[in-house]
Structures are given as structure tokens and as C-alpha cells.
Length: 124
Image (cartoon, rainbow, N blue to C red; front, side, top):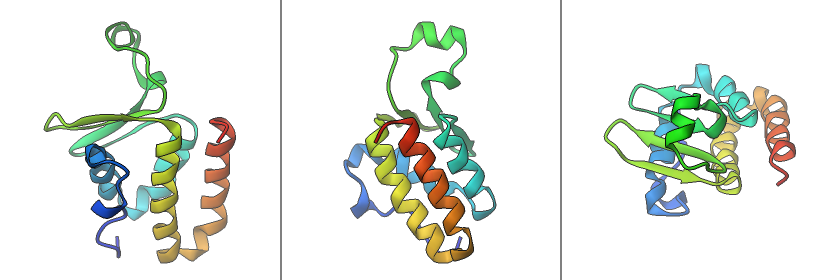
């Protein structure tokens, strides 16, 4: 990744959203498109030090133990977790996709299609 961070501290909507920043900054360029495609379909992803999980990613056992939430849960292995709604997630997707496309302009059309899919799915 050419940019040191895809999300900077000053771009966080709330300081409690640090796990969102940390996880998105862990995604390497080779996996970036695959990760955002999954997110646009409500499928989370994992990195070495944490994961992004949508409600539908949970198995039945975990669903019974977890209060249903809208959006995605970002959690780090150190125990930091935050659930953000679809609108906040879209805000962060716009930031990381913009920075990715600055670095890889050839992927801009595909990235914009993925963002539009996300917007359509979650009625933003």
C-alpha cells in the first residue's frame, strides 16, 4: 500500500471507531477489491489482528448469544470492538475507496460499481 493509512485519525467519526480504521488499514492492495465486494454484499472479512462481521456472518449459536445489530461489528484481537451502522460504514468505504482509486485509477469504474451496489443494498 503506497498510502501509509487508508483512514487517518482525523477522519474518524468517533474515536471509538478505531477498530474500523485499524482493520481497513490492514487490508493490502491485492485483497482490497475482494474485501469491498464482500462488504457490499454484507459479508465480513478477517485480518491478522481482527475482523469485520455482519449479523448474517454469525452462526446460529452466536446469533442466540448476540443482540441483533444493523451494520457491521469491527473487532480487534485485543478486545476493542465497535458496531457501526450502514451509513457510517459507507462513509468509511468512500474514504478508503477514494484513496485506493487515487493509487489505482484503472480500478475506479469497478470500485464505483461496488459502492453503488452497497448503496442499493442498504438504501442509502
